[in-house]
Image 1 (tube, helix red, strand yellow):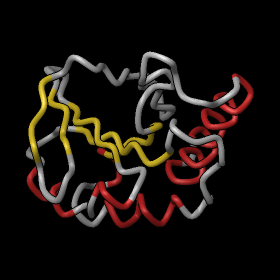
Image 2 (tube, helix red, strand yellow; image 1 turned 180 degrees about the horizontal axis):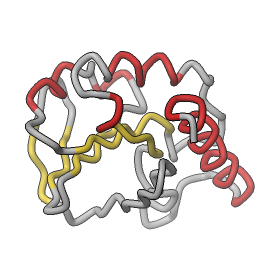
Image 3 (tube, helix red, strand yellow; image 1 turned 120 degrees about the vertical axis):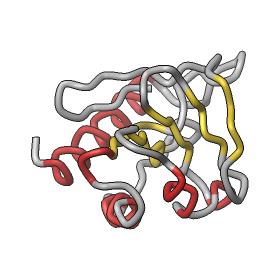
Image 4 (cartoon, one colour; image 1 turned 135 degrees about the vertical axis):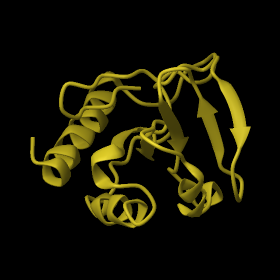
Amino acid sequence: TYVLRQSHLPLHLAFLRRLRAGRGQTVRRGERGAYYLEFDDDRSGDFAPLAEVSGDKKVVLGLITSKKPDLEDPDTISRIQEAAQYIPLDRLCLSTQCGFASTQEGNKLTEDQQWAKIALVQSIAKDVWGE
């Protein structure tokens, strides 16, 4: 999963250790100082667990689903602002919730739909962070 913001291009790695945080939310804890969180559906819960993130850690918000071809509403920006109530905006990043082949058979998105999701992430990131 790509995070299109500034010069950062972290990857969502499936083998990172997991830590439970809040109502159904899983925090993947890596050694690089960032948490990659899946917030693409209602079962993910709210952003309250972000209040527990310490110090200078970055938080990558997986708000764009890689499971379905439909593009999310650009209102995703309001969800980023909601998360910014817990973590400063300069420590937040945006990403798809997972990779596009998160199951053995892959997700049912065409290559064009996958690129449209990535373009949406980039567009929203530019609107929020201005780059």
